[in-house]
Structures are given as structure tokens and as C-alpha cells.
Image 1 (cartoon, rainbow, N blue to C red):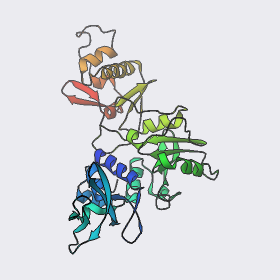
Image 2: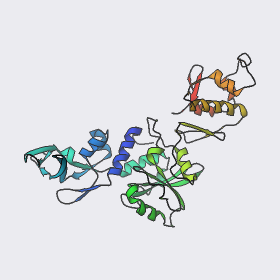
Image 3: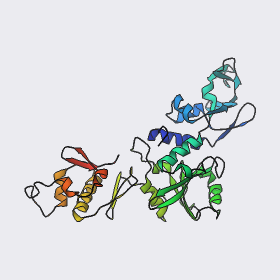
Length: 335
């Protein structure tokens, strides 16, 4: 990836603000401003001013704000002052003039292209396939990120903003038969009721589920996305554990590839490790794993000389999925 990558927590905050940026307000000249006020950013996210500046250009200033008034709140008009760093308003309770910082009443709009390119990076979408990012299908509501490999096939991936309020418009647009028959629509924010079904062979996935929450750096759980794409069920959630082992295939949420376990003894070893992980035991002694792999050797003496390297001999793939966490101990490589 060629650009600076925020942390997973920061990316989720940016996505929250991206959703909020669909709101509209007016400046003093009556111009429409799309974005989020500085005061709202301060109250709803952990972004510092430097990060706001990097991701959310300032597009103008509010013409009015809400302030406390008795037991409720009241709208008050903002006026410029001689100080470019502040605005003022008349307090509805005392009628005195009060000042508020310009940063607090400024409106910031998310740099959609920057955010969407980051999501495309996480999905390994080639740059040449991203023509839909600067040309939204529905202005400020629906973009085509490009084609990503999800499972065995390349799949068109879309991003929708404000899906809970724009769902009719988005789904109507995707009914266009000139578009591919199948696709994945990513969105953030409130989930749709299960009775609302996407058109044709499109599926909806939520970024708060698709982003691996325990990973410090953003990572897309493509195994979850594949399950969403291939299932007829709604409301699919990612694996409760960082690891999933079923039908002889090991999947780790932070890895795009899978490991198809071959060989009876390797299968027994990985199956045992997974069973113990489900019980909260992530780090195991090599001797314990080897005992599960070689049940016919019932004593430590009979297993003397066996090593993990012997168990997985001829298969270097195991080192991508199992880590030697400390001397004599092994665990799934979840990061």
C-alpha cells in the first residue's frame, strides 16, 4: 500500500464521520455545506486536529448552531468577529454576546476519494480497476470501488453511504441490467432490517464486521465477505474467533489465503489446536500437539524425538498459520 494507513480504530472513526458527512447545512450566504461541524467531530470521535486536516478538508462555516437554553436547546445565529479565529452569538438566556472558536463551527467534508482508495487497498483492488471512485454512480451515495478477489472469483465491490436512508435509490440503481449480475455492497452505520433484500445476486456487508477489530492495522476479513457472498442467509456475522477450521480448511481473519490441511496427522494436530482455542487456550506445548497428532504413541517416551517440523515436513505453509510463540510453545498466527 502506497499511502499512510491509519489504525483500525481511527479508520472506524473516519467511516463514522464519512456517514455523518451526508448531512447538509447552510452557511451565512445560504450555500449548502455537506459535512460535519468541528464541534460534532470533537464530541463523536477521537480525531485530533492534524488528522481532521489530513482527511477532512474545511468547506465552510455554519450560519447557526444549537446552544443550551433552559432545559432544552435553541438555535442561534452566528456572526463574524474582528478575530478570524472566532465567531459570536447572542445567548438566548442572558442576551449577552458569547464567542465560539472558528474551528468549532467550521464544516469539514470527508475526502471520499482518499477513504475509498484506502478501502480498495485493503481489498487489493488494482489501481486500473478504480475508475468508479472519482465518478460515483449516485452522487455522494454510491461508488464502485472496483473488482476484488473474494474467494475463487473476482467480484465487483461497491460502497454505499447512508444505506439506511438511501436503500431504495441504491437498490434501484443496481437493478440496471447493464451492471454485473452479482456484486458486493459495503456500507457502514445502521444495518438494514432483514426483510429488505438486495436486488438480483447482490449482497450487503458491513464494514464494522468486515474490518478485523483485534488487528491494530486495518485488515479486511475476506473470509467473512466470501460467506456473505455465497450464502442465501441474511445477517451473517464474522467468526467469533480469529480462527476458523472446518472441512479441513483453516482460515485466519487477517489472512486472505486459506490452508487446506492434508494428511491425517496434520489434520489431527490443527483440529486439536482449534478445539483448545475454542476453550480459550491459544498457546500450547509442542508435546501436547504432537500427542494429539500421534495418538497411537501413548507415552512421552514413544514420542521422543518428534518435532513440529517433522509433523509438517514438506509443507512450509504451516509457518504462515502457526507461530512458535516461545520455546516449545505454538499458537495460531492471528496477526
